[in-house]
Length: 313
Image 1 (cartoon, rainbow, N blue to C red):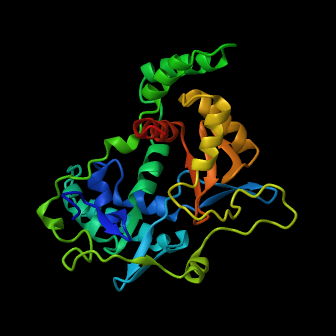
Image 2: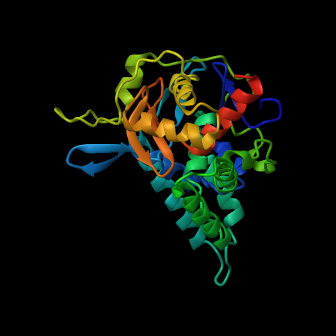
């Protein structure tokens, strides 16, 4: 669809049709797990009027008439969840007695085709979500390495090179394991994306008032000091974190990941720039240029710093 990849270009930005996600992830994400993530509210109620961004929520967009798109509210995915549950029960009920997963192959095709063919996720947002929702601990060896990482951080004079090495092992970007050129079964050829035969248009987003109408983001309770979904009027979407990263590098005196992260953590706690003050593990919450809750992971920071070093910045 796009230079041999199962992605499309929309408004100059790479997008992934949701029908392609199971194959791109080698079925680590199935149609039912995808719609559950899309049905996940963007924020979680912590009580006392406080809400924080949910790391499990994924936002998808629906394209209309090849001329615009808009985000789909999480509430709209409740019906697809029910549909897929019913499909699973029906195919399991049709299996012969004693047969196990006899209809699993047909279920895969039918389940994917039950997803809308004009809905997509932004590739970079999906990669970030996919990375944040993978289990960090996969083996006893990982548990041992995690303990080493925690001990290294707690030393009076941390060895930054050792910490970076452990970071690279424990926080390997899950997005790198995606296969965007996955082989599809014949039953899905030409069915991943509604507009593939007509050419993917250069589209723009829906007017801002349309986006506001479908937003599930709750309004902050009056008088609350903590508001993790604050509005940040920063124009450049892709560089929204650059100013605070620049500030963190300046304070750290180097581009070492561990040093820069510690400075960013302090900036995040003070809600500097787009940061919201929420920290979960090694992930720092912020809002992007469209006021959507996002997380800056340590691995994502490491990749940003590597790109800067490669560019000489």
